Length: 434
Ligand code: UDX
Image 1 (cartoon, protein in one colour):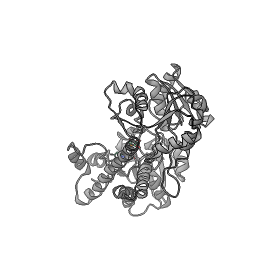
Image 2 (image 1 turned 90 degrees about the vertical axis):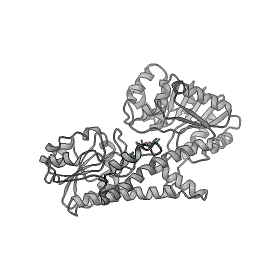
Image 3 (image 1 turned 180 degrees about the vertical axis):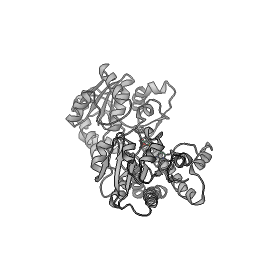
Image 4 (image 1 turned 60 degrees about the vertical axis):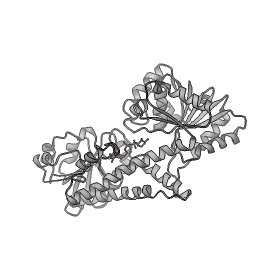
């Protein structure tokens, strides 16, 4: 199979590299020459464990190439994936489809024979039909079918998610397009990973419904956590207890400082908009979005309590600023709300993050970046565990406590045990929902 991948952002790059690893010939396209040069030199514009090695292996095998020319990549391709960005449009919360539609137009003009044009970007219901319309208008002669193939990759675990998916969802209208898509995913199908073939609208809807449901699950447990604190329950036990019910499931029930990242905030906002447009308000999703904002405010209050009601003049060490571990992504990270509240309240903030500094420096003005947690905690009045990077899970707590001015900890990811922390010399320990 010959595949063109339009867009070398997170989704496009991971998908392109993984498809080439299946044995397909993949050509990845990006308008940005600097990005293409970087990729050709074997370097990645993003951080994702394992991706660089996989990229190098497939480039070497001659299956993976990069270009700035969409026309070259589309020439002779069996399938063309659109994996360009769909940011939230300023003002109205809609997904901005400018990049998707301009890619569709260019593809239509570049097509040389029949191809399936597959949307991988997360797009509102109905977009695939619009892609087809735009393509037909741009080139009435073009022979193609459209398909929807949403991705469910988690940052930091993307390769594994691609290679061992819970399911692959494919929305098509014709049997021919279904066959091309099945050929592309045959390596997964043969290893018993289910491929679900459905209509276009259902495929588009599955992506939004899945992300909104997961965001709801997290937000639900965050709200339960707040109540647990008041009634003296431990949310970790509650999560475990409800998660053992197979109907509920034990995943995505970790209480924390609120969900962030590139998908949940964007997709819940887009789904809410779609609902409003069709006069079926997504009331649960709208509430989830509001409650998630409130979770961050609640965290700020928790930290203020630990600082004896004022951040002014306090030194606060923040461990982790990315929205989750194993990524350098800062998009919609809780730290973007919590850290400015600390700085704005007059605290001296000392930050450490294994991968977040490059992006974080511009986004978190007024903080001091440190090399490791021990340096960050030196002289601090409070240490805040914001992102659960593995290297923060087994800190020498005694050493941290000794270096601090007033050893107090806010564990916003519930990774430590109160007795251990207090036993190591901390005078206060606050977690979430316990
Ligand atoms: C998510 C979806 O999981 C993925 O399927 C989709 O395609 C893209 O969006 P991602 O944003 O990379 O992936 O991260 P994920 O691991 O899902 O975490 C999202 C957010 O929820 C993070 O801020 C994380 O800290 C938070 N989270 C997750 C919790 O607070 N508690 C949990 O139990 C799980």
